[in-house]
Image (cartoon, rainbow, N blue to C red; front, top):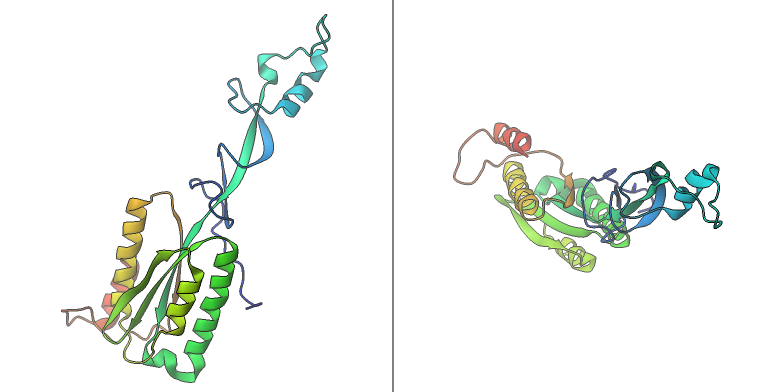
Length: 215
């Protein structure tokens, strides 16, 4: 777990301030006062910066600071927003060989610990046999995600194309319903696709590639 890098999406332009710790956002009405900018219509005045800017003007006859319109400064606040981390886990027979699945589960559990600390939501898609399945809808319960992964059976073929199609459908619904939701997709697979899409006899690898491009 100590070798797992902390995952960041970089600066986010949108999001709900204060609901997570991973991704910084700016321009929010709440959050940490980080700097001040010049403005002629302040709605969150930075008193300290305004007084510094007006200091050269001196004081009026009553001893009050003289503040001109171009001395006004507004606070710029920064906060953080939560992330939805969607894990797509290959549980096929090829992943069960050579302790690959143990490594994958260990990696995901370490990332789940980080997600818990960052107050993120997590979801899990698993694929094996003939198709993929959303085994855990987005939730803040990291414990539930751990239980689902620990119970996850392995073996069978690798329906990679269907996993990518299901991932696309899942993310599409999330973005449609929550357009400001920051999303991080983590796919763990050896990429050995050998099952075509349901009700299809097309080329397995072409289907996987086309699904990946669409995603």
